[in-house]
Image (cartoon, rainbow, N blue to C red; front, side, top):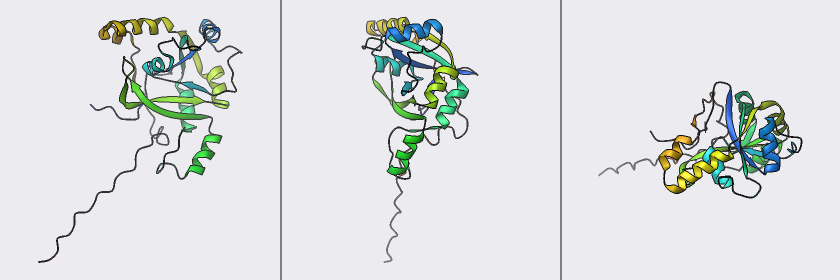
Length: 213
């Protein structure tokens, strides 16, 4: 079955969804130890969360990039996640999807969350033909994420390194067995309608009417 271009795939259960972030050890390790973000985590800045483990690996270089050495799996409530989606707007202007650029800019200024769809990645971190969701949280959404929605925080840096080692050695089957089992997220009807920018349909040309002999 062909994968749809825009769909949330994630590790989730009936109550929570797991998203990923990467931080410097000075922030990431205390967060994992205490199961909550410390006071040093800036609640007035935008933070991006990713339901895709492999997209996070692409972003942080398997936990090797400077300032992203500690990879965290953050389990948050589905209620909070869906609140953010309902109150989000697209991070970029799409002609034919938004009314006009000025209206989109007003949405962007007012929305506490924004969505970006980036190519999903395979274990070699090569782009796939369908998209993975990134969710940016600021203002009220960032504060709720840190202080209300977070259920648990787990340091998964060792997992990232182990999977990376298996991929580098060519053992993709073993690597796949360690990856989080991400499944399509059960969307409520209309949840992502304002966040899926579909290209405008190309009008079908009418066949010319044959002229009379």
